[in-house]
Image 1 (tube, rainbow, N blue to C red):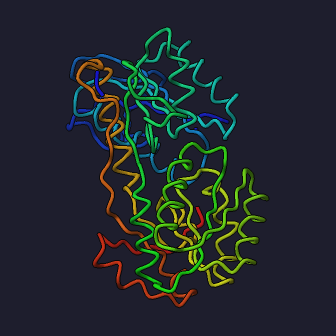
Image 2 (cartoon, one colour):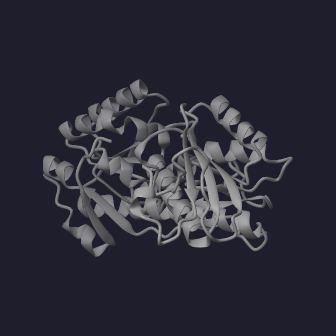
Image 3 (cartoon, rainbow, N blue to C red):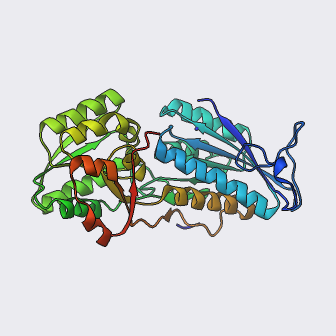
Length: 346
């Protein structure tokens, strides 16, 4: 091959079109028997088991996992098979992630679908002996030296790698007078290492100063954002950093109050109050991941690439934040597909 702590259990099961809607339960359109076991209608009758393991709970990862579940439901229905899946969260704890991955192996699942880099690394290690297919989602840099998920014959997945230079170009297009940029991220996030290095290099190339603030907990993120506000930076950049994503709702208003637009690596930040981003659609990312998982369990890993880079180019702007900042973002319409959202606080 080239290159979520209470768990939520669902069953994606093949459905015949003639079945009445009353048979559909409240688990995403799956069909279940009223007195116990799941039913398979038509098709081959084969049953497959999947374990979906999220790094933690926050909007981006939840959106991806929801999309994976929905797509698995459809794949099962379309192909006359049963796909049983369980979605769990490691709550950001590597010990819990290892327990979840080890349990998936013990349960003899047909595929593990880890969401985010730490979950993927731990799942790949857990599956080393059994060679259980691991199909990851939202690993920005699978080939990074600190990640090393490429070149493993039982591992594939989807990458949401950032175009860091483009996001900084957005920043400069919106405000050509930017003199200093704050870099807000976590040192423990593999997803942040490369884009932060890229941001530093590009800002230096542009003759723009930068200030770094790192954090690993909500309280630290709040303090780091306050420090950047005190420095009066002209804008803040955060890559697809899960630690900062979890805390976005706690910092977005303080950055608005300081007049600082927050540019981020994912639209979930923007839906939680950040100003703007350019990146992939996470619903599409989850769907593509589920497609790969289906291929892995039904056809095997042969022919699958090390990973698949998702197309970006979707610019998302929070219109409420833009209004509060009195920020014109009309120039973004010429830079990509513009999506306008409001703060949802989910």
